[in-house]
Image (spheres, rainbow, N blue to C red):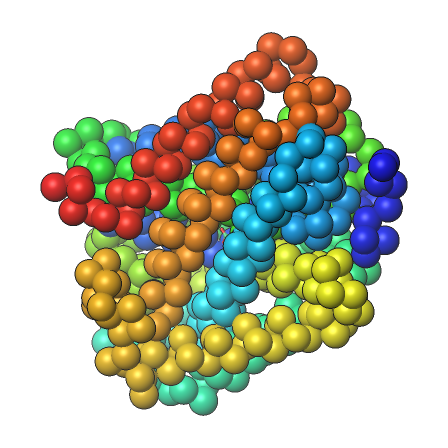
Length: 475
Ligand code: PHE
């Protein structure tokens, strides 16, 4: 059977549209909030080097593997794997790993929307502040003028203590995501990516240049790129791989789903490389945007998850034009988050359409609505349910709140599991002629890819999965 149309009958209007949407999916909170935080906590350069190795040795082959499955399958994640399996005379039970991917996308969307809600809140606060700056005739003043450092940093605690405010932000963000996905691949996802991604890159470059002019670039470069290999613990490697998978949107069948809307197979290898390079480039640029500012003001690069929400707003107060820059900075993160959350919602939505026969709006509403409800549990974990430890019986998650438990369980268990199974399936089960014809790789590159996907990915990701689950093995 030759599949010519997707189950949903939808498709990208061009290769550029696919690349923008896929880069939009990859570039998100993971790049701008998580990557600098992890690099800061894990000692900078050593982490960055391991991260880059993970992206290109493990991530990139997996990106191509997922896009390959989607392109050949032309269906939702489960249906696509089933078709590739049928064309390769492999068991249709392989499609189960697609189901695990779909099941991972959904909880990730729940907490992603909550965190994006914080970004929305800060965009609002700094937007209002910038507006006031204009009205007061001093548009280039620093952010949140007149507020003490304690007051600025206290804003995050106040936000977390206020379930109603968290809920409102989460609702608005999920609503926007749902609206875009319900409109469909062409009129929703593709359109959002074609407007938002160019805007994103303009903002990013602008803010990096600002950091170069006003910040301490030398110290930031030294911090990000001087490797101190004594800091390379197994945990750091583990974290780096988990982050690489998350940042490239791997292990949730996201690229299978987006790949299924590709019509003509030309240059899937080059496309995959562009996605990996763009995603990594943005993560590094985000570091080069944030750390010069952090160092210029003499703040702590290892502040952890509060780096973006507490450290930077204070830094923006003392920087020239900080009111404007601070506002643009949070708008930038918000844009990145939306183009990622739509891909997270698209995965289960496509599944509902393809496997359950639901209409797109119905499927999007069911999964978006359910993810909204699960997100409420996450945000209550910051206030009313702050002592709830959902997986408290498991030493790994003994002291982890609701949001971090969902984040940790999906990131440490589900994503590596799906990534490992994807590589085994493509490396060992998929028909070899299909691999060659559908990816369009040259023979030499094909050989390298097959080696990486059949041997390096399953072993490395498997090892990291096991050590991630049983960290005591590393002691
Ligand atoms: N890659 C996104 C980010 O870095 C997160 C994401 C994960 C999006 C999985 C889609 C699927 O923020």
